Amino acid sequence: MTQPHKLDSLSGYQDTRDLLVTRYNRGHGRSIFVIALPLHLIPSHLPKPDPDQPFPGNRTVDLPHARKFAQYWMNRKDWACPPILLDTNASLKFEVLYEAGGVQVGILSLPHNSVGTLDILDGQHRILGWYLALEEIAAALKKAREQVVQSRRSEDPVAIQVWTQKTAELEDLEGRLRDEYVTMELVGGVTLQEHKQAFADITNNARGITKSKTVEFDSVSVINRVTREISNDHQLLAGRVDFERDRAIGRNANFVSARNVSDIVRHVALGIKGRMNPRREAAFSDDKLQDLTATYLDTLTESFPPLADLVDDNTTAEDLRKSSLLASPTVLRVLAGVFHNLAVELVNDIPQLRDGGVEQARSFFEKLAPHMDAPVLEGNPWMSTGVFPEEGGMAPGSRSQELTGLTDTLTKWATGKESMPF
Image (tube, rainbow, N blue to C red; front, side):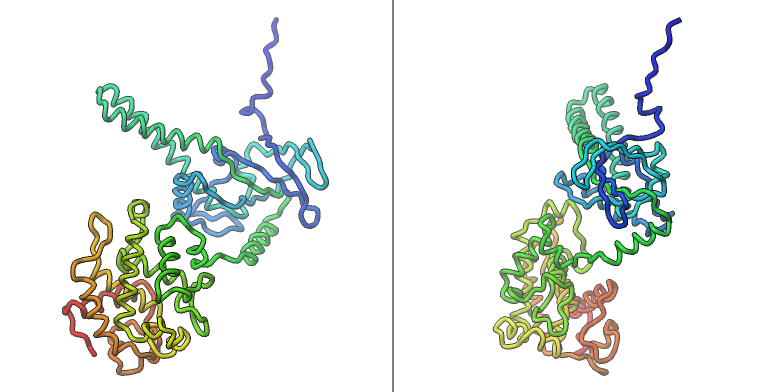
């Protein structure tokens, strides 16, 4: 009787997942395994973070942040991210193939149930993001293929073209999941307490990048690109913008931070509550957005003598902080929101100047100009706005509702819906 052939090499029937890895030692002789994992294997190899149930020894994952990373990866073929850090309390089997110095290359055998064995030390938002991307692509591709079939049956040439193109785009994304890799670092034999300590060490030693530094480096966001240009080109800002810190306070020689300027650019274009989205990112012109912002800054400089003095180097940012509300980034943001309400309109969701709006804004700013002294003391009409947290304040509160409330109040003053209290 002929004996059946044994197909022991079929991966679906093995109790391990074998990967080509690099191993080296770090602190106390602990082995670090470096793995290049294809993105489509993330669901079969790594645990899925749950926003409703945080992993022991890790923070709660933020679902919107994970979704944002998923969109980032799908939209950017030149994506970048640091390695994912993993550990496990299991012992790991490693077969050395090559060795040079303290670095070994070989085969690491992960347990077949690695999803339940490995623990995420750093990178859970990226992992959840790829989970979400995989699910979204699979669902969209299934729908697109169904529409192709239906379109062909109904002999609709336009629909056939649309859904065939959509299917090709999704298959390209599916191919990227197969062809692109993420680097992972894995440590074995780690207890839960050691995992928690490592997570605390990473958090304590990390120095987050400021939003101002992000503005300096990022070239994808139109707001950030315009912020850099206007900061270099406009007479009020040139040489007076801090690209390191998010706040220009005290003896800082700079007038504002890059973060402040990026907020101002956004408020001029979209209002105090306006937000960017992918469609606006694609539609907005750098030059037009810079021109809008420059018009706002010109109007400020022409309307408020202390800012003209700053431009002419007759005063400093440090001195201005001691005597004027105009040194407050919050006030500059509110005035940008007022300028938008008076002078800017969205035409097909694209911001442009409204006829007569700049003159209306300038006229209102000139009326405000004599009343911008600081600190704001008891009896000062500014206290009636309800956004100055305490007597003697040098600036209003900067919470979202305070920004919105003060912008609305000043807009009513400017349009005559409420009388100015001065």
